[in-house]
Structures are given as C-alpha cells and as structure tokens.
Image (cartoon, rainbow, N blue to C red):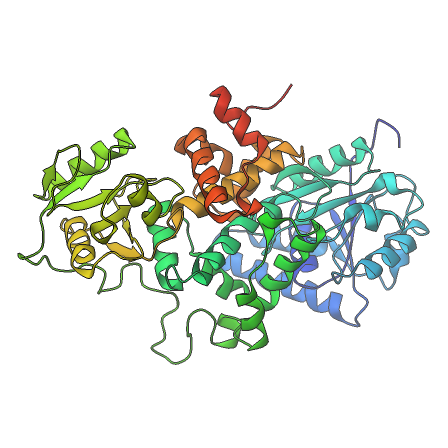
Length: 514
C-alpha cells in the first residue's frame, strides 16, 4: 500500500446489531458517509431508526441540536447488498463473533471494494491475523475494537495483525481520533490490551472466594473501599453475566495455552450450569429478585462496626518488620486510645499484630515466633482511611479477634475480618492486576502509556496499572508476588520480568526500553 493515502470519507459497516449500530451512530455524527448493512432483513433499517431515536433523546436533553441530528441520520445509507460498499474507504465488520463467518465476509469484501479500502474487524476475542488470512491482501486488514456502549466508551483499540501495513494502522488511528475516541495501538494477541489486562481482577477474586477466605459481598466491599475500584468483582460478574464472562475467561486461558495467570475458576462454570448468570437471570452472586432486593451490596453492612467491650484487651504489640507501616499503625491505635506494647517481644496479655506483604497471618506469626492464638494480621497496602482488613491465623482465638476488630473500628472506620490468606484480598488482587499489565508491556503488545490509558478508560480502574504499581512501589509488589509464589507454589504469581527488573533498578514501571 502506498505511503500516502487519501482521507477517509465513506465507511461501510457490516452488521447492524448493538455494536454495529453504535459504531454507525458515532461515525455518522462525525460527518462520514455511512453504508450500514446486515444479512438479516430489515435489521439495518431498524438500527437506523433506533439511532435516530437515541439522538433525539440527546436533543431533548440539550446535548445535541436538531440540525446535528438531522445531518447525522442523513449520513446513514442502507445499501441493498454488499455491492453498496464498492466506494467505501473503510469497511468495519461487526458481525457474529465466529472466525469462519468473519473470514467469509473479509474474502467477499476483497472482490467488492477498491484496492485502497481498509478492512477492519471489531472482534473482541478472535485473532486479527487469522481473520486477515482470508484476504488476498492481508496488509489492509486490521483490528478496530470498540467497546460497548460505543457512543459512551471513548476508547478504541487499533490492532496490528502480523501482516498489517503500518500505513493502515496510522489511517485507523487518525479515523478513531476523528470520531472523538481515544485510539490505543496494540499487537494482535488474545484479549488485545483491555480484555487481556482485565483477566487479573475477576479471576483472583474467584480464587479468594474459592479458598473460603471471605464471601462475595465482603470481597467486593474491601476492593471498593480500600483499593478504590468502582465495582466489586462479583458485582461486575453479575452485571456482565456469566454467560458472557465465563466463556471469555476460558477463551483467553486456552488461547494462551493454559497460562496460569489467566486460569478460570470452576465456580463460574458451576454457576453458569445452574443458570445463576447475574442480573439478567435475577440471581448471581447476589439475589436481584423482588422489589426489596438491593441493586448491589451495601458499601458498609450494619454489622461491620462493633461496640468496644471494656473487658477486651486494649494493648497491642505491633510487628516491626515493616517500619513505615508499623509507625502508621502505632499512630492510628494511639489516636483511638489503645496502649502500645513497645517491648522487643510482646507481653503475655498483649494483642499481637503482624503486617505481612504477600504472606498469610499464620506464616507471619510463626516466622516472628509469636503466639498464633493471639495474633491478627492487618493489611497496610493502602492508607486505611476508608476501610481496614484484619486477618486471623488458623487458630486465632475469638477473644483476640474481637479485641482487634474493636480497636480498629473505634474511630468509626469499617473493619472486616477475613480468614487466613496469603496477600489478604487487596494485596494479592492489585499485585496480580499490575503484574499482568507488566507482562503486556514485556511482550511489547502495547506501549506502557497505552496500557495505562486503555485500562483507565476501558476498565475504569482507579489508576493505570503501571502508574498504580509505581505509587505502591515496585519493590513492595515484587515482594508480595514472590511470597505468593512461594506459599502457593503456583506459577500464576511468578513476577513479570518487567516488574522485577524495574524494581531492582529503582525506576518507574512506565519506563520503556530503548
């Protein structure tokens, strides 16, 4: 393909379902001439009508003018056959997510469009290279992955197949920008950037609940209040539906030839078989049936905060293995009137508090030669201002557990106590998310900046995972992952070389390689 190229004017869209309709809407709004086609009779006409209705609601809200809507709708033409794409500068396929169907369409388009026309697939899970293989001119085939709902999700992944021309990628980047969307470039790999990076959150939460560490509501609350996620993983699974989420988890896992980092959980397979899909079925990890059923779990259940019992111990000994964290805990407990045991070893009637990174409470207690029956662990990964997570050893006595909960809830901040788990809930989940993002960078799938940008927009995480890792500290994350890998003996937690090297060098995880 020539290095110079004409500006795109006419865009064909094959497939008038939810995604195709959304793409047609924003392309028409941007002033391009749209040719919308669907194999199902009247589907394209219905899509055009729905687009007009959707835009009319924006007029009613004062977000668009009637003139702008009339112009956008007028830009959408409905050809009778694929021959209507003959003058297109770009054709975007948004048909059923089946490789054979997409390959057949691409091969057919080869005989219809001009030699400079770009062919783009909106696939979310299939190989762009495999789709392009059906074309006699694979250099002009690329991925252009939008997110649902297309008009609201202002991100598009521009995917480079093995034989895609660099000029095609640049044309698609320019096109996506003209739509008012943010383009990020990615190499062809299972899940691209967003669906690849998103494998850490839900799968780790499923592993936590599968180990009996805590229930779904507790895990959701901890990850929202401590880590700042907008939705808990089980809320998200219920919203998406297990009929969608579980096959994606399995697909990514198998496409990476059983990479342990992406291992799905048997729990979702079982729940899918039972029809517990989430909101769409009325029941998932939460029950949505009935007028009084909550739309989502409460942020702070009324049972979270307990009243202090005067008979409970008010003195605590705090591990010094992490001096910075220890001082934060000392200050916190002093502020609520607790007495601090400053001895090198704890007094016989002091609560023992350990602050492990990637270890469980039992291991931390035994490593420090503490009495595990009166030892409780506290997660100090984040600032503890909105929520605190305590963790018991396998033999912590209820008296000491309740004393710890009473101390840490004394200022009104909610506290949850979980069962023993290497890495608590937040440490292991956030470390896993950051580690996968590091490996995406290590594989050169995308630039560090584009990884963070795509995850922030596409997944609405509190921060880009690499910048988040910098804020926590790469050495600390490396320590968490090494401890998880050692305690579990599972390569799922092996640290990415991208993380390990930057932690050792003392540089940002966003540091690219020359």
